[in-house]
Amino acid sequence: MELFFKMPSKEARTAMCDASLELGNRFISNEYKKNAEEAIKNVTGHEHARVLGSGNAAIMAAMSTMNGPIMIPDQGGWSGFRKIAEFYGLELAYLPTRMGVIQLETLEEQVKLKSSESLFITSFAGYMAEQPVKGIYDICEDNGVILVEDASGSVGDPLKNLACGDHSHIMVASTGSPKMVNVGNGGFISTNEPGIFNNTGFILKTLQSSPVTCAGLVEEIKKASGNLVKTIAACEFLKKEIEYVLHPEKRGINVAIPHDEPKSIARLLRNNLKVRGGGMITVCPRYDRINQPAV
Image 1 (tube, rainbow, N blue to C red):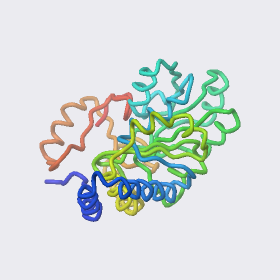
Image 2 (image 1 turned 90 degrees about the horizontal axis):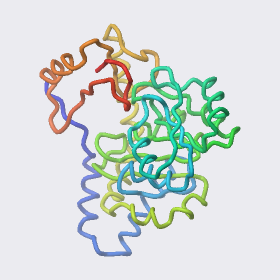
Image 3 (image 1 turned 60 degrees about the vertical axis):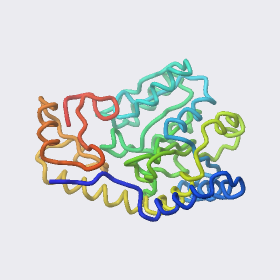
Image 4 (image 1 turned 135 degrees about the vertical axis):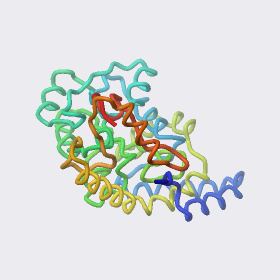
């Protein structure tokens, strides 16, 4: 079976080509930027947004305002959380989870025990399982903890459980391949707190994205909700067909199969599932997914 790696839509590619012809025109470049920021604000519900060079750039901008400790899940998060915290010399605190999914009772205990300034999570634990983001936000809000949601895999959630500005103090996302908003590169940060951007003006300017990326984002973000719904539906189908998977009852955008010999199974899958333009098989244990043998 041959599959095709997710690419930006035709509309996004056309918009990016058109924008590339205007490089150097400051007025038009600023219009692309403003339009992209408005599109992000409309989808996230946040009042302030910036388009940046990558998802990691967005995380870097968010962490630049913090003194730590930074709390992150013990698995199923994003490796960039750890690397960027270490880059800034910020103390890390690990939150125990159930196969990546945060348990609200545990969070309630840990935020008091570890006195963390912020909590960085991904909307889906390891892309496998939906996090209870609203419950997490409520606990963080009650305890003065800044919740930063990496919504790379959940932008456009029609249920508004994920990637919803009402449930996160700061939202970050990648818009690279093969994310829900896929323009091949870039990322964004959004918030309702204007002070965050006021305190990060230099780094936001340093990490800003190209007007070409902004032009593509305006078109691609229109398709995010549809992309997410189709991906979740495909994963639900696979979970029903495969005898044993992790988090079978939760919404997710990938499927994790536990196995004692994940490397051999991954090799078999790669030989039978050819993906033109990218890859789709990940071997675990891996912090970004799950800390147990699986594919």
